[in-house]
Image 1 (cartoon, rainbow over the protein chains, first blue to last red):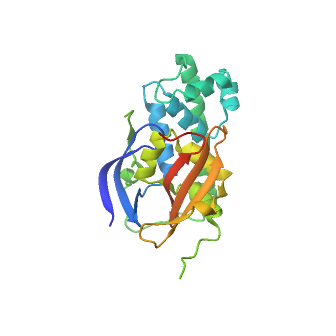
Image 2: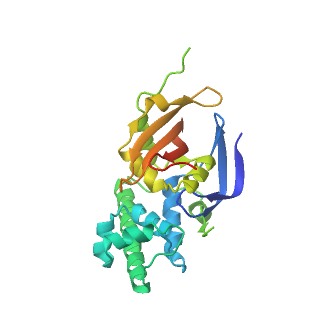
Image 3: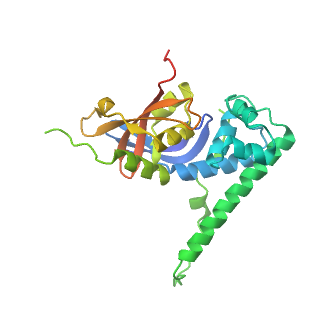
Length: 155
Length: 104
């Protein structure tokens, strides 16, 4: 039987992410949260980039791999040796050694990459659109539907 | 009658990953935290994984197979055995273990 959890703590990235209104499904004796990992990752990345708290090793690793960037690519963009980035990711739950300027540069790189990806996705959706509908009764925009999986904490 | 196995496990797991439906169970998340394995390690390992058919097993209710995959992450420092079951279109990570590390 399925359960709906008001809050659910996802632990798969190395740090805790709190999700709201998650359905916990049960199948063949195993439970699992019925979530879309692509949406969880995107919301988590945005929440981290919006947070004023310094990044820890797990969070740096999460963002770099989410952006599908190698150590060398990040190194070239923010001018930190790849070996140093690797050692900072290995700090796990401890904060990285990024200076404020380096962390700002990394966050800007991440934000730009996410925006470029979203721009491509919006563009693709628009290109594939064959028509716009004209319903007789217009319904209110439901922002909540796009604002699930809410916030990140360092549990 | 013996329960049939899926013929294209690797392709199905990779497809589930692509659409965001490779999901770790709560038990798997606990084990991953304890073993210092993150989702990115698992996804990287799956991209180059092979099947470990001898490690496949049945679910508790004996109605489905759990499949064992084996692969390394991009850094090559984690050699992961990942146990997966399916609830279409989702692939559920039941557990993951790093074979390079000794268990306590």
